[in-house]
Image (cartoon, rainbow, N blue to C red; front, side, top):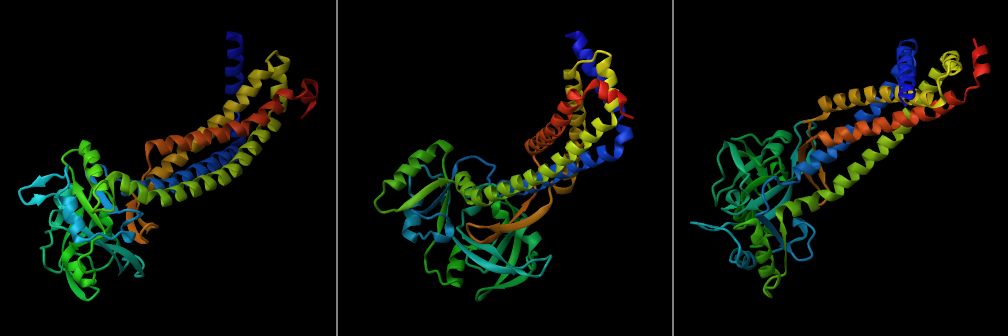
Length: 396
């Protein structure tokens, strides 16, 4: 066994030392694999960023209540009486001002993008007086909160960054009203940062929605209270509602687009991976052709076929690892934190998010590079082991 390992090490080191003589082909293979990894990470970082934007990072003690059968807020309708009954349900947290619930209205408006000046759909949300206390992760970072009963809006950081006219102190015309932008808020990197918020009663009047709402956001006394809260609502004959934890609700909203982006990312990576695989095959076949006499000499000196096979595969693996690490590093510095916006297909509105390159994504990408390298070295390795020694020694 020791002799066999020594043979593997010697043949591998011999092959690695000759890489500078084949640097053109070696660099081509490594760069091809680096490109595959960079594109793979770049595309999937979009899905990771969107998923992160639609995921609440807090506890499970916040619930979203929709009309039964509704898939999103756009298709949900609740009455003021529904909101009152939900607010009185067991498990709802309370403050000195009353239950921590927020009856909410959701409309889509058009605003011009800062980058292209073209209009895009933006979520405009009417909320209750307790909305900030209900969610907990909403923080006013500039200006102040809107005052109930007035045409004032606060703007999420993602929306303020992406759309014109949303600076504090500006006036914007939306619908029949002129609104004062009085504050900018952060929401823990979540979907709320892509929205504009105002008093629900003012939004109802501005868009002629009567006293209707589309959802209720409720803070519970604890995450464990959700079961009791849900049972009390679903068993109440006055209501036809669907309670969800906020985390679950946002995950549902992001599933379609996240799955689509991931599928596209894997398809692109597979197609580019095939190209890189053929590049690796070509590189290793070239290496075998250039080293025919050397390999035959080693075989004649007593080196076995299996050490030759392993040495060629290890050389291919080394090139793949170099390409994979370079590609992963390039993708991380190029894409991580890059600000962008896309359409949420559930509501057809813009969601601002940041590309997110996670450690898990980098590991998967490098594993993909390793697979390409191993496959690229397999067949050339087999050919190297099968070279007739006598014929190979006669080659010039």
